[in-house]
Image 1: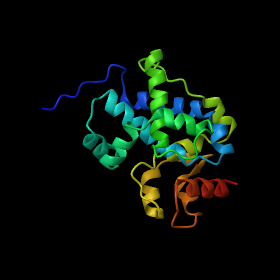
Image 2: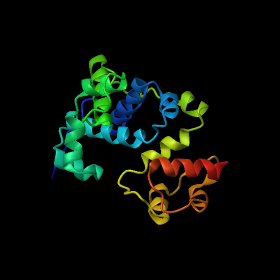
Image 3: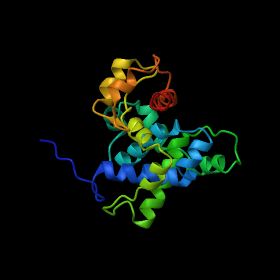
Image 4: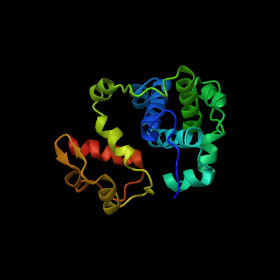
Length: 199
């Protein structure tokens, strides 16, 4: 029987959420992502948050992380070893585009800040729910969170399986997906088409 120690800070999911939302905060918030048309960073940030928590809190190997998240070992390693200082310079406009994994570096900055302040171990996750609702993109966060493991371009049946049971603004996801044009090129295309279908 395999016994897996629970991380000191509690649930892996809660800790990854903290890293994810702290990463968004470090960028300047969801509004900043929208201004720069970088909503496509959300799935990468979610993935990076999980990689860092699994590596540093659950002490998983790159192979274990890759299997659990449906990514390659190299991607897991790139995220975990990204130079956060290079990414910080990129976000500050000092560098063009670093060779580093941007979401990985950003998540590392967020993880380090949470760990140093002790906030990673706190039970409650402080989410800027009001900011998400005001921008009318709370549904986008839920959609992106469920896309883990989907390869793009994606077909309707793949998306229906991943998004099953989701209700956006009172409408079932199957109804919404029925109005989209396939194949869906990438997560940004999916969000854009859903937004148009909701209008």
